[in-house]
Amino acid sequence: MRGKSGFVPDNTNIKKSSGTPNLFFDFKNSIFFERNPENILYEVTSTQIPAMLGGSFADLYLTKGHIREPHWHPNAWELDVIVSGEAQISLVDPDTKKIHTYIVKPGQVVFIPMAWWHWIIPKSEKLHVHLFFNNDQRETAEGSDTLRLTPPDVLQLAYGVDAQNIADALAPIKESVIIGPPSPKTNSLFTTNTNRIKQEEVPKQKIEEIIININGKKIKL
Image (tube, rainbow, N blue to C red; front, side):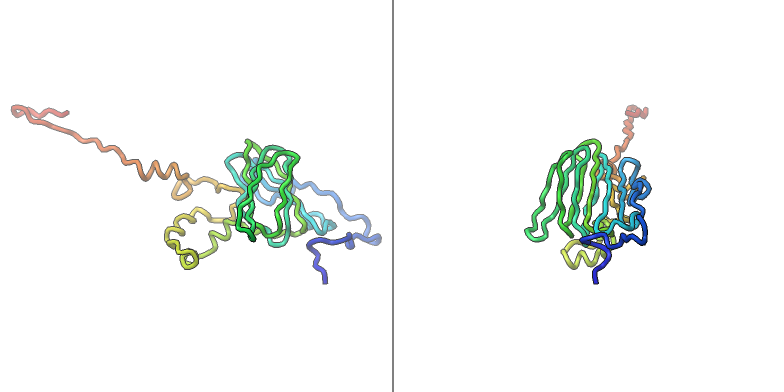
């Protein structure tokens, strides 16, 4: 029996006897994730419009210095349409093991096949992208969840990396990132690499006193 999600050839859920369904929705009332007011992701699925079977929509706003983190959709392909700004959209081909990167501007699109690992980086100060999916209840697997939920000793066993080093490196990832980077913290590993270098590698200057004795009189230099 056919499931409700995915491609459907006709709107079999719209019938004369049920009347005209709700066909309008303001997607600003459905926030999938918000890092701040200028880095935000809205969505419209069959949860918001039940009659919209077979497809869903997301609206993404990013500013330079942020990223739609690496992720993949196990049950939907994705079509990215640039509305304004310029984006770098990258995806990994699971067959050829190659990374494909596209620099796209308004009027241009990038198609991401189902289950392909991908990410979006704004190249302009501000970026606005429409995202279309061929599933009304798309699923998303975030890279941050894969990293933070995999035990470090498993990563060591699988890849030969040091478990403690991996644990320390991934410590800042406390939750799903979705739009990165995570909000900065005043402590520990949330500081940038530059700040960490300044704090850890630049030694504090020590002030030493030099005192000489001339004919019984102490003179401080």
